[in-house]
Length: 344
Image 1: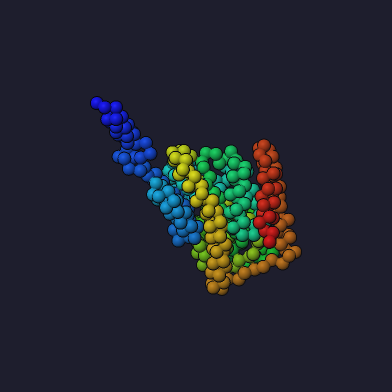
Image 2: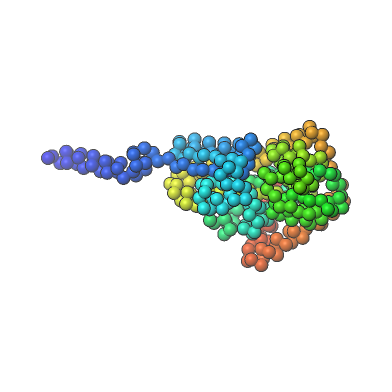
């Protein structure tokens, strides 16, 4: 056998061995496709679920089909308060829900939900994602955080009018995590409850009102079962929501697909944030069409509300210091970035 023929046969043999090993391909020689499940607690018609579906589609397109994502909206795969654990345990590969639905588990990131006077969901989403990436807190290390988004300033929606702090006495107000703490600080009786449960609770009088972003009144149709909206932007809190991936599923992806996931996630920070802005506009229009009364607090009353919730912020700083967490620095950075983004 000539030297040229010998090298030719060796090349064919090496190529066959490479293909048989599945390097860069599936075992049958086809490009490997990574099938992922995505659990979302929002109902499919909600703008945030729809934006998440657009994210999934974009990931599939940029990966040229090497990542396929099946979205399970409406809490059909894991319920809202089970989503984080579901991601950790692999019930779903991806998950979107609220940090606040597992209170005490995210002691540093709780600062994001504080009544800081958040102006809008776009600001929340930019700040929350940037801070989580800057600090990379231990509390989220069990999963891969792709990005965080959050709603615009929480308002108070009720079955009877609330014009002064005194009107809240004896009222049962639904909240989650820190928003429930806000209700208590203002003198109401807080009732912990996720959004999917709230419509029926308001309709049946189990609760007298709810703290929520105004978009919720349209997105979850809760405007149908309340009569009044009190503008509480002066103590505007948010609810930060994770988009997280199971660590094992993340590690199983090759580097180029990990990069694509992060690139798409970066692009969707503003997409989700702007979706919250649009949703709030629709929520306001929805309750106005229903003829609900919008109550604006006078400046002196806003000051009273701010004074009532100030201990919540102080308590966060105390707790984080006791746990050896950089809560003071984290909160200062959050406020500084909020101010920067709010400056024209």
